[in-house]
Length: 318
Image 1 (cartoon, rainbow, N blue to C red):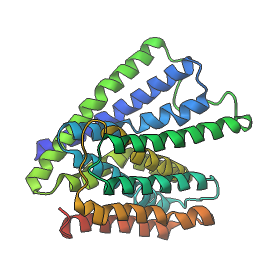
Image 2: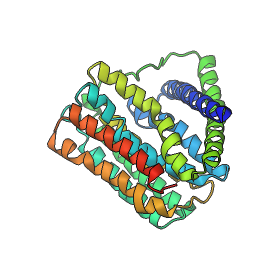
Image 3: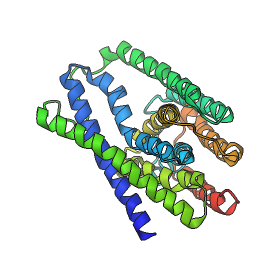
Image 4: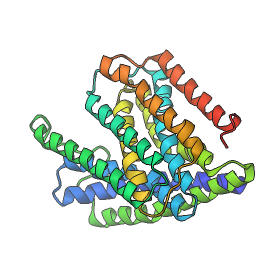
């Protein structure tokens, strides 16, 4: 058991480090090829930051534990809203009027509804995966089109944070190779450890995906949000959560579904998918009403997440 938890911890650390190296290397390469920083931010960075979750889900499908992949996505989306927004809000109020996320929120809700429909068509096979990826393509096209239309209002010399556009070629190559090598290895360690723990405690792979794996892969976003909140910038978490949830639903399962069939457990159709939808709808009054997500709302969000965790284990959802 200690070995399994150690394998999970090592896998998470390797995923975070490898994902960061891959993003930095890929962004530096893209900028060197003359791709505008604006487009790089919407595509390369977005895909790169989702690489750890993507590799975990693909590894789960290839290791014959596909419900871990599904649980990872659904659990991560629930955690992103209730925990990644809830905890920072307890530190510093999240203002929703400083960033216009209404269109992105509508797209997130559309992606959520499409994902739920696909789950009820389950098991998820390659045609369903292509449908999800097509939805992602439409959203990316809209984002790039809108970004280019408004680029006159942006700094033409805009830089992407923490990335050196003049990074030496050898370092770019090293970062990309290290990232590509570390991601599948970290994902394999995480999935192996999680599967062993599921068997040890007699719980389903679905529950492990919804809890341990989902929470683990959401830790980087949670750490970033809490750090921003301590600096009085908790509002940055809102846009990150909405964008991350869209990618989780359309990209991760869309790609993982191309590697094998993903069954949708009945208990997920009855319960978890609707918790994810309900958590998403909770954001609507704040985004459309420009209401502040204050401390007590943060307490409510975090408490709701803890209650959900308890229900997974004591409510017969194993």
